[in-house]
Image 1 (cartoon, helix red, strand yellow):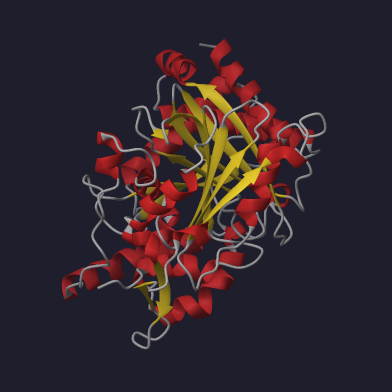
Image 2: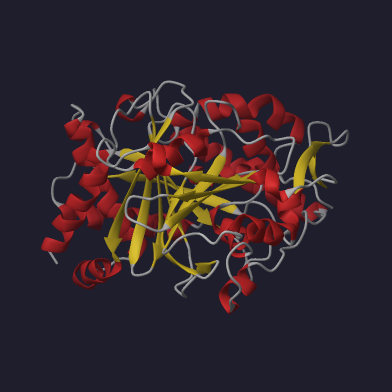
Amino acid sequence: MDRLSGLDLAFLCLDSKTTPMQMGAVAIFDGEPAADLPAVLGARALRIPKLRRYPRPTLFPPGGAEWTDDEDFTPSRHVQLHRLTALSALYNEDPLAEHAARWLAEPLDTTAPLWALQIVGGLPGGGFALLLKLHHALTDGAGAFSVAAGLLDDSPVTRAAAAEPARGSRARTVRDQISAAVTGAGIATSVVRAVRPSLSAPMSAPASPERRLAFTRIDTADLRRIRSAHGGTANDVVLAILTGALRDWLVNRGHRADAGPVRALVPVSVRGRGGTEAGNQLSGYLCDLPVHLDDPVARLRVVRREMDRHKTAGPFGDAGAVPKLAETLPPAVHRLATGVAGRAAGLLFDTVITNVPLPSAPLSLGGAPLREVYPVVPLAARQAVGIAAASCRGSVHIGLQANAAAVDDLGSLRDAVLKSSAALLGRS
């Protein structure tokens, strides 16, 4: 069966002009793009079944959808070329980020295969970029690399990652359905308890289709030094650094840092060890980030305790597991209620912070080595900022996305990330 799961369908229903539910990535390669690169990418896309499918509504169950092959699939419709010649680095701090923000914000056509690529040349610092966007209904962040791997040059790493996952979802037994219902009831109770009385104004935003992007990096050697001095996982350290950055950013925007914690939804992959499941396999943690604390080491300690508490409870243990709650709802309910629930996301969390796993082995495209890769997480409705991180070539690359109607300049947040990292490193 190729039926969309409950969570896949939820992402499809959440999609709108002001909240396009698509993940993105900005990958930067050394050298110039080969002349035949668009044709190469098109040929590789033809070999990836997931990129030929689009969601089609089903009569039964009502409100559901299934993946259907596009009989007129033409890869060239999804692959574009662009040069930044019209932009000048003299007047634009990062022309690639400005261009990518506009391109990634353009909604995908949900009646066609849910992806697009753009090859961007003319970068001020040399090299070229590959912009990728995938609808969240197609896969999650961890599964996105398995799609992208099929577009990259062949290697043992990309070959293993690109192995086609199982199609559709297996039929659930009565025991499965009872277990899911019990789990869903527990999550629903936690969601009700976690709802806050009003939107958190410093992190909220008006509905807008316009976006801004900014990119920054943290040296993984610095993360290791911080971990050696203070403990915790690499993800704990990244969350603590981002907590400090959000604190400075809020203060610079005229908000009180001691008004309360910023609550982040931290997605958690629940894929099996083999990673062969199709679609989204997500849960999440709702983490209160201690932006009220001035001491960077104290912030890291609180983040560690918060993450340890969530890990002990497990990925289905509290309101952060709301993605799994979607699996228990009938398709018709998604069609009716998902939009309303999406607009109320701010009652549960202020931002999304995700860490996308990437292999450490060298990767290339058309013979050009991958230099940098910045993931981009979709913004929830009426939220100002979303943050995604990925490790690549000795650095953690961080993509910051903002609602342009609420955030004039992301440079201050980008700079705050580096400042926060330096503060922790100085205490290590």
